[in-house]
Amino acid sequence: ISQRIYKDFSKADRVMSFNSPLMMVCVYVSMILVAWMGAKQIVASGNNAALGLTTGDLTALVTYAMQILMAMMMLSMIFVMCIISQASAERICQVLNEESTVTNPADPVKEVADGSIEFSDVNFRYSDNSEKPVLDNINLKIGSGMTVGIVGGTGSAKSSLVQLVPRLYDVTSGSLKVGGVDVRDYDMEVLRDQVAMVLQKNVLFSGTIADNLRWGNPNATDEEIRHACQLAQADGFIQEFPDKYDTYIEQGGTNVSGGQRQRLCIARALLKKPKILILDDSTSAVDTKTDQLIRAAFHNEIPDTTKIIIAQRIASVQESDMILVMEEGRITASGTHEELLKTCDEYRSIYESQTKNQAQPEELQ
Image (tube, rainbow, N blue to C red; front, side):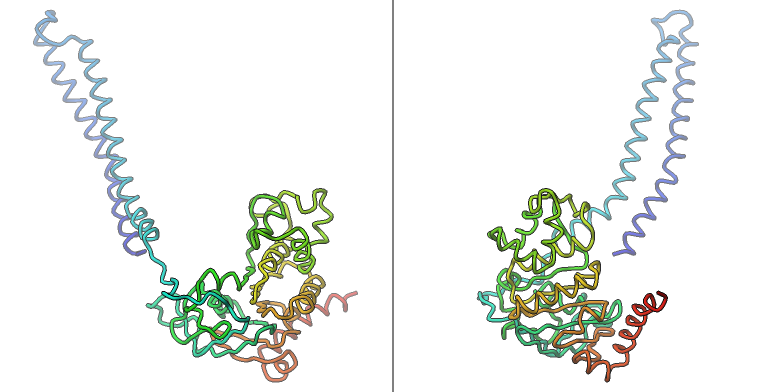
């Protein structure tokens, strides 16, 4: 596709490079012909205007000819722009006409029993033409109510792994079960209502804080909204606003900080009362103390919800029931924080580098 677009634009550039000089040659040749033929008519007619052109007629003729030729130049420019836009228009049509491969089954399951998750020999590619799979031979069992942490370098497919749970993509091979049922057998709306995801790049809409939070649950009461914000450690800063929950949020949340946006989005996800809560590096802009309070609230208030936490900070996942270490689309190690410190060199090196960096400021003091 990129190669075809490149060829189309190259062709358009070549046409455009010749277009202006050719059109100017045509204009000036036409002007010379008009002037020459008009001059002959004027000379031939002498002083008798009835027999031919006058000088005024020739001036008018030149003016009209110039206007017509300028219009022709504009038409040629439009033709070139059509060539340029054709490739883009075709690509837009392809996107608009694309049919999703993720569809509801004929007789979908309408209820998610619990928050248990099971990956069985899962392989995943974003494209069938990809040489290397994004996820390779994933086998994993997560019990309902467990807290699972995922760590790994950039590009290790942490986000790709969790995006399969709400069926944003289908597995290429193998099976993924939620509540003991393959995700491809669920009604998509039912499944996604029970899986709440909070991404690193949070999205808030223009409107009040309460309106934004009710995107998670349109029927939520004021008390439910406040309770969700208390769990997400957002109630404190909301109460400091003059209008509290009626405070207006600009498009994209530009009038609140990154950490406040993240906490509001966590609260919005909690209002769904999901069976599975996925936090994809969604506390990266939150200080470590607030991060710890959020995790403590999850542990105490929603113990039956399965929680999957993707984080760069070991402190955000070290209290998890199970921690996964991922590298190049594979789960290279799993276990508790203490077990991984003993058995996984990569996990231990990440932990030591982070704890060393935290200790340095204290040593300088």
